[in-house]
Image (cartoon, rainbow, N blue to C red):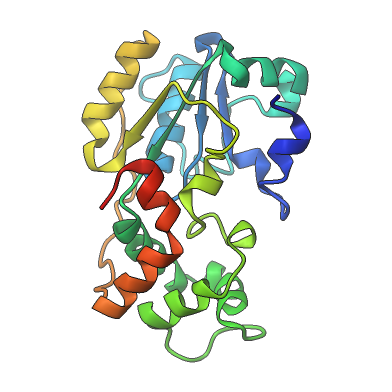
Length: 224
Protein backbone atom coordinates (compact mmCIF):
# COMPACT_ATOMS: atom_id res chain seq x y z
CA UNK A 1 0.00 0.00 0.00
CA UNK A 2 1.28 3.44 -0.94
CA UNK A 3 1.69 5.67 2.11
CA UNK A 4 3.16 9.04 2.97
CA UNK A 5 5.81 7.30 5.09
CA UNK A 6 6.98 5.11 2.20
CA UNK A 7 7.28 8.11 -0.10
CA UNK A 8 9.23 10.14 2.45
CA UNK A 9 11.86 7.39 2.77
CA UNK A 10 13.03 8.37 -0.72
CA UNK A 11 13.66 11.95 0.44
CA UNK A 12 15.43 11.80 3.80
CA UNK A 13 17.14 15.12 3.09
CA UNK A 14 14.00 16.97 1.97
CA UNK A 15 13.06 18.13 -1.52
CA UNK A 16 9.67 16.47 -1.76
CA UNK A 17 7.95 19.77 -2.61
CA UNK A 18 9.58 19.95 -6.04
CA UNK A 19 9.29 16.27 -6.83
CA UNK A 20 5.56 16.08 -7.50
CA UNK A 21 3.93 18.33 -10.07
CA UNK A 22 0.17 18.05 -9.83
CA UNK A 23 -2.51 19.27 -12.21
CA UNK A 24 -5.75 18.16 -10.49
CA UNK A 25 -8.11 19.47 -13.16
CA UNK A 26 -6.39 17.26 -15.75
CA UNK A 27 -5.93 14.38 -13.29
CA UNK A 28 -2.22 14.41 -14.10
CA UNK A 29 0.93 14.00 -11.97
CA UNK A 30 4.46 14.49 -13.28
CA UNK A 31 7.21 13.02 -11.09
CA UNK A 32 10.38 15.08 -11.46
CA UNK A 33 13.55 13.41 -12.70
CA UNK A 34 16.28 16.03 -12.75
CA UNK A 35 18.48 16.43 -15.87
CA UNK A 36 15.83 14.70 -17.97
CA UNK A 37 13.83 17.57 -19.39
CA UNK A 38 12.23 18.47 -16.07
CA UNK A 39 12.23 22.26 -16.58
CA UNK A 40 10.41 21.96 -19.90
CA UNK A 41 7.92 19.48 -18.46
CA UNK A 42 7.24 21.66 -15.41
CA UNK A 43 6.49 24.63 -17.66
CA UNK A 44 4.17 22.44 -19.74
CA UNK A 45 2.35 21.35 -16.57
CA UNK A 46 1.99 24.97 -15.47
CA UNK A 47 0.68 25.95 -18.90
CA UNK A 48 -1.88 23.20 -18.55
CA UNK A 49 -2.87 24.33 -15.06
CA UNK A 50 -3.17 28.03 -15.97
CA UNK A 51 -4.85 27.23 -19.30
CA UNK A 52 -2.31 29.59 -20.85
CA UNK A 53 -0.30 27.94 -23.66
CA UNK A 54 2.22 30.80 -23.55
CA UNK A 55 2.78 30.79 -19.78
CA UNK A 56 6.47 31.20 -18.89
CA UNK A 57 8.53 31.78 -15.77
CA UNK A 58 12.24 32.37 -15.25
CA UNK A 59 12.34 29.53 -12.71
CA UNK A 60 9.71 26.80 -13.10
CA UNK A 61 10.99 25.08 -9.93
CA UNK A 62 10.92 27.88 -7.37
CA UNK A 63 8.07 29.81 -9.00
CA UNK A 64 5.71 26.96 -9.72
CA UNK A 65 2.01 27.85 -9.74
CA UNK A 66 0.97 24.21 -9.37
CA UNK A 67 -0.73 23.12 -6.13
CA UNK A 68 1.47 21.26 -3.67
CA UNK A 69 0.77 17.93 -2.01
CA UNK A 70 -0.21 19.87 1.11
CA UNK A 71 -2.63 22.03 -0.91
CA UNK A 72 -4.40 18.95 -2.21
CA UNK A 73 -4.06 16.96 1.00
CA UNK A 74 -2.24 13.68 1.43
CA UNK A 75 -5.36 11.44 1.36
CA UNK A 76 -6.49 12.83 -2.00
CA UNK A 77 -2.93 12.89 -3.35
CA UNK A 78 -2.34 9.23 -2.47
CA UNK A 79 -5.59 8.30 -4.21
CA UNK A 80 -4.46 10.08 -7.36
CA UNK A 81 -1.02 8.51 -7.17
CA UNK A 82 -2.45 5.02 -6.64
CA UNK A 83 -4.26 4.80 -9.94
CA UNK A 84 -6.82 7.58 -10.22
CA UNK A 85 -4.49 9.96 -12.04
CA UNK A 86 -2.25 9.61 -15.05
CA UNK A 87 1.21 9.45 -13.47
CA UNK A 88 4.19 10.03 -15.75
CA UNK A 89 7.89 10.80 -15.81
CA UNK A 90 10.76 11.02 -18.27
CA UNK A 91 14.11 9.23 -18.07
CA UNK A 92 17.43 9.62 -19.86
CA UNK A 93 20.40 7.53 -20.93
CA UNK A 94 22.45 7.39 -17.70
CA UNK A 95 25.74 8.17 -19.46
CA UNK A 96 24.38 11.33 -21.10
CA UNK A 97 22.60 12.30 -17.89
CA UNK A 98 25.85 12.01 -15.91
CA UNK A 99 27.66 14.19 -18.47
CA UNK A 100 24.88 16.76 -18.17
CA UNK A 101 24.90 16.55 -14.36
CA UNK A 102 28.66 17.06 -14.29
CA UNK A 103 28.08 20.50 -15.80
CA UNK A 104 26.37 21.41 -12.52
CA UNK A 105 29.67 20.98 -10.67
CA UNK A 106 30.90 24.15 -12.36
CA UNK A 107 28.07 26.31 -11.02
CA UNK A 108 28.68 28.36 -7.88
CA UNK A 109 25.39 27.40 -6.25
CA UNK A 110 26.40 23.72 -6.42
CA UNK A 111 29.89 24.07 -4.94
CA UNK A 112 28.81 22.96 -1.45
CA UNK A 113 27.04 19.93 -2.93
CA UNK A 114 30.14 19.00 -4.92
CA UNK A 115 32.32 19.43 -1.82
CA UNK A 116 30.18 16.88 0.00
CA UNK A 117 30.54 14.39 -2.85
CA UNK A 118 34.33 14.56 -3.11
CA UNK A 119 34.82 14.71 0.66
CA UNK A 120 36.11 18.24 1.20
CA UNK A 121 34.77 20.96 3.44
CA UNK A 122 33.62 24.32 2.16
CA UNK A 123 34.23 25.44 -1.41
CA UNK A 124 35.98 23.26 -3.96
CA UNK A 125 39.30 24.81 -4.95
CA UNK A 126 40.82 22.08 -7.08
CA UNK A 127 39.72 21.17 -10.57
CA UNK A 128 37.02 18.51 -10.61
CA UNK A 129 37.27 16.02 -13.45
CA UNK A 130 34.47 13.70 -14.57
CA UNK A 131 36.45 10.68 -13.34
CA UNK A 132 37.09 12.19 -9.91
CA UNK A 133 33.42 13.04 -9.60
CA UNK A 134 32.31 9.56 -10.71
CA UNK A 135 34.83 7.88 -8.39
CA UNK A 136 33.48 9.94 -5.49
CA UNK A 137 29.90 9.03 -6.36
CA UNK A 138 30.84 5.34 -6.28
CA UNK A 139 31.52 5.76 -2.57
CA UNK A 140 28.36 7.75 -1.86
CA UNK A 141 25.03 6.56 -0.50
CA UNK A 142 22.70 7.01 -3.51
CA UNK A 143 19.67 7.87 -1.37
CA UNK A 144 21.50 10.96 -0.07
CA UNK A 145 22.84 12.12 -3.44
CA UNK A 146 21.75 15.40 -4.93
CA UNK A 147 18.80 14.59 -7.25
CA UNK A 148 20.65 16.04 -10.25
CA UNK A 149 23.02 13.07 -10.15
CA UNK A 150 21.10 10.64 -7.98
CA UNK A 151 20.05 7.39 -9.72
CA UNK A 152 16.84 7.90 -11.63
CA UNK A 153 15.05 4.91 -10.11
CA UNK A 154 15.25 6.71 -6.75
CA UNK A 155 14.09 10.06 -8.11
CA UNK A 156 11.02 8.48 -9.68
CA UNK A 157 10.48 5.97 -6.84
CA UNK A 158 10.09 3.10 -9.28
CA UNK A 159 10.00 0.55 -6.45
CA UNK A 160 6.69 1.89 -5.14
CA UNK A 161 5.02 3.87 -7.96
CA UNK A 162 3.09 2.48 -10.90
CA UNK A 163 3.40 4.68 -13.98
CA UNK A 164 0.88 5.34 -16.69
CA UNK A 165 3.66 6.53 -18.98
CA UNK A 166 7.46 6.77 -18.92
CA UNK A 167 8.95 8.83 -21.71
CA UNK A 168 12.55 9.19 -22.83
CA UNK A 169 14.44 12.42 -23.26
CA UNK A 170 15.94 10.95 -26.42
CA UNK A 171 12.43 11.00 -27.96
CA UNK A 172 11.25 14.07 -26.07
CA UNK A 173 8.80 15.68 -28.46
CA UNK A 174 7.45 12.40 -29.82
CA UNK A 175 6.95 10.89 -26.38
CA UNK A 176 5.29 14.07 -25.10
CA UNK A 177 2.84 13.86 -27.98
CA UNK A 178 2.11 10.25 -27.01
CA UNK A 179 1.55 11.31 -23.40
CA UNK A 180 -0.95 13.96 -24.53
CA UNK A 181 -2.78 11.35 -26.59
CA UNK A 182 -2.97 8.84 -23.74
CA UNK A 183 -4.01 11.40 -21.13
CA UNK A 184 -6.37 13.23 -23.52
CA UNK A 185 -4.58 16.54 -22.95
CA UNK A 186 -5.06 19.74 -24.96
CA UNK A 187 -2.42 20.81 -27.46
CA UNK A 188 -0.04 22.61 -25.10
CA UNK A 189 3.40 23.48 -26.54
CA UNK A 190 6.47 21.95 -24.94
CA UNK A 191 9.36 24.42 -24.62
CA UNK A 192 12.98 23.28 -24.88
CA UNK A 193 14.41 24.88 -21.75
CA UNK A 194 18.09 25.81 -21.31
CA UNK A 195 19.64 22.94 -23.17
CA UNK A 196 22.94 22.00 -21.54
CA UNK A 197 25.96 23.16 -23.52
CA UNK A 198 29.53 21.88 -23.43
CA UNK A 199 28.79 18.52 -21.85
CA UNK A 200 31.89 16.77 -20.54
CA UNK A 201 33.81 14.25 -22.58
CA UNK A 202 33.94 11.00 -20.64
CA UNK A 203 36.85 8.56 -20.63
CA UNK A 204 36.38 4.79 -20.81
CA UNK A 205 37.15 4.57 -17.10
CA UNK A 206 34.54 7.20 -16.27
CA UNK A 207 31.96 5.40 -18.38
CA UNK A 208 32.78 2.17 -16.56
CA UNK A 209 32.16 3.91 -13.26
CA UNK A 210 28.92 5.44 -14.53
CA UNK A 211 27.67 2.03 -15.63
CA UNK A 212 28.37 0.72 -12.13
CA UNK A 213 26.76 3.64 -10.28
CA UNK A 214 23.65 3.64 -12.43
CA UNK A 215 23.41 -0.10 -13.14
CA UNK A 216 19.80 -0.27 -11.96
CA UNK A 217 18.81 2.64 -14.21
CA UNK A 218 20.28 0.86 -17.22
CA UNK A 219 18.35 -2.28 -16.32
CA UNK A 220 14.99 -0.78 -15.36
CA UNK A 221 14.69 1.74 -18.19
CA UNK A 222 16.11 -0.39 -20.99
CA UNK A 223 19.33 1.47 -21.76
CA UNK A 224 22.50 -0.25 -22.93
